[in-house]
Image (cartoon, rainbow, N blue to C red; front, side):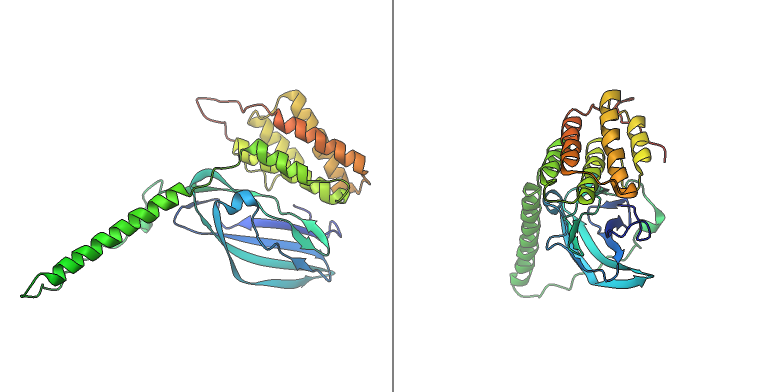
Length: 295
């Protein structure tokens, strides 16, 4: 959600990550920033992450939230530490809605690459060589101490193996992109949400679907940039691309030009996306890989 407080009186919220990729043993810092007219009241969700992302990330808040004045507006920020449970080329970080001055606003989802090990050795990653630590001498009488040490080492090894097996079995099955998109669209009720809330939700679904299915990273893109990136990756046929573009442009008119969309218009756009996303074409494959989009 890219609008700044000066562009709209409607509160906006966005999430940023401190790195695009990390190892499975590392942590990710995500900062959620909300802007809106003063006085700005932000009630974060009880569970930061949506259901599919809560299965693959552990979340901990980093300190208390802050609230700062910015002219006639205010900015609220809260940092979170995320620990990954599973590796992947595009592990989703999707959020639950934030309550902002009484309105539900959802940050656009992120995707992060989680690696199981270093991809290239670096001198900075090397640990200094240390001498071998000598064990204390065994007592001269009996073998009780040595047997106890051996049993303890074996026990710790077995516990580590059992923990690794349990963690492996507990890995959740990722939600397919189309199934995720349909569930998100079902939650967008034109009779319950304002046109701005619903069109923001429609835009977020398109970005999330493209990021999950085609490994693009559309979070900072405008509508034109998103469509250009999708075209370069061969995401849609011309007919499907035209339908998606028409819905995104209609959403932009509501967001930036204040178009007073009716519930019937919003329902039509939602149903159009439901058909377009479920019939999205496979990406063009060149030499076995999806072509990357130039930055």
